[in-house]
Length: 210
Image (cartoon, rainbow, N blue to C red; front, side):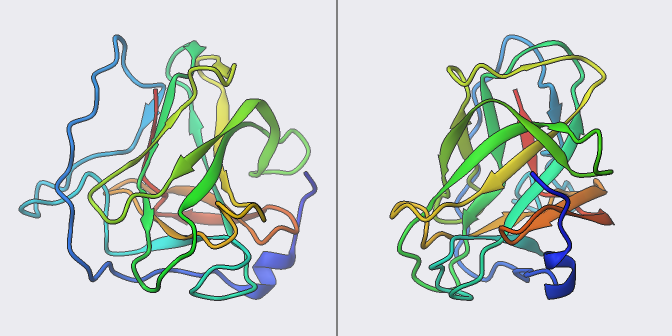
């Protein structure tokens, strides 16, 4: 995957605040051990708040999306593994945008290494990618099953959660939002299909790697 410049020139497609009805949070299953990484933290200053922010987020767009047809936007965020082991699940604060009627709701999730040649961008995919489905609305999470993806992490090493779309019928019309986490700030990357571009610290998308 080459270092890219195209998206830096085009600008970033942000969603703005969520305006629709909110779905109550569902208690996740409790793993036997703690997560490799998580920034899913409930905002205690907001009654009934999600464990991520619906004030803003970045679009995850398939090429036939209904918000900006013809535009494609992929997102990735880094994390440092807190322990060594195999990934079984990744939970993401990705939902359907609700701004228009999307013809698909699926997307692809993969774990990448940190690039040794391009500073601050994803490197090589580890194991297999999996398909996720954007739920209808916050506060729901997109739960992706990595149980058979053969992704193993090492404590103290930087990795990337990478979310992309494809031209498949189940993904080309996806018009989703990766809502920002509460409180945390970190660097992030955007890709319009022409290469990853690093941006300075901002509120990352909410996710938990388990």
